[in-house]
Length: 499
Ligand code: MN
Image (cartoon, rainbow, N blue to C red; front, side, top):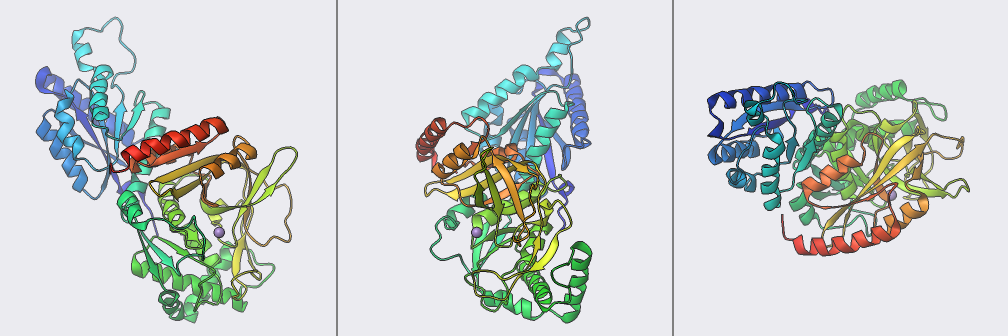
């Protein structure tokens, strides 16, 4: 699965009006093109950033925004008011616009040319009040949009815009994501459940169930030649100490990987779940298979966790080309260290090797639960550094996206008896407050763990999806957090029918 962010377009539309005459409109268009091409060549903006139009009438505005709705390459629109664009002209266009919208509040000019400035200059460089007129109309329409303020050549502005374009691509992808829920979920588990119809209405992704027989059919069709070829890849990419690549269990793991990938490709799925309680027809719980599929860009959730699978798929699209990596994760065990309590995150097997600090080791060990043969898995540690844990939960009347900022801690100890990939982190502001507020928010034990994305990506995503966002970071206080939950309860009760 090759994800190329440059195949997606963001359109820049510049608002103006006819009051200024042809000459001014010409230089407005020239400046807009220059800004768009500057942003397009920015290393911080991964998509194809396109100057699309200068609009001066309600009809033009409506038309170009409709075109953006319909163009499959266009993932979002950035508007910029170089001059004053009376905003009643934007009502019809904005009301009917369905894709992510960003309002770039910038100005062509950098500093004021103090000795030269005259009224012509003033009339050409009116973003300062033109942007406010647009802002009023968007707010009056209750139109969700990202506002980005600063000079367009500043690195910090380009970084903000670049992150938003990544989220717009992630959102675009979510509209097409098909999640295969293989074997339903772990029985009696609550948090992996939810309203799949509401999720599809809200986020665009669909979730459908498949029997293990559907996968086993593809696993059974895998040839020995294909298996031998994949084992050569394993030998190149991983170290083998505890087992040899020739072991029967490794061959079986490779067969499962090839079969599972063929099943996903055949159905056009980009995310999936499985469960150790329902593996009929498979000899092992997929371990290395799931790990490698995640590294390729597939979303995954264990034990039927389709919400985490879909969220992970979106993040795998957003983080293309960024340093760090992203994995499915579970808060496993606490380290109540007197110098600061920490969390050891892991799963039975399924941690993505994009976060590994070194060449992973391929190992085979018994699994305490599930009653299947010993599964192959990749074992590794993770380097220290900033990271986030994100959880998408269904609160019954709304979806909530919960983010905890954490600091991963470089491995301090050998863990010779722990045969799974793992990562140690300090939760912000500390484990006492982080776990307290996470639990009050109803956050899942499963998360998307990312060293590539920061909180702002999730803020943008929540705004585009128009869902609740709760963030646990260095500023979090338990009492304020409780109040935020109560206020949000009222807010989403009032707005729950607004799609
Ligand atoms: Mn789990």
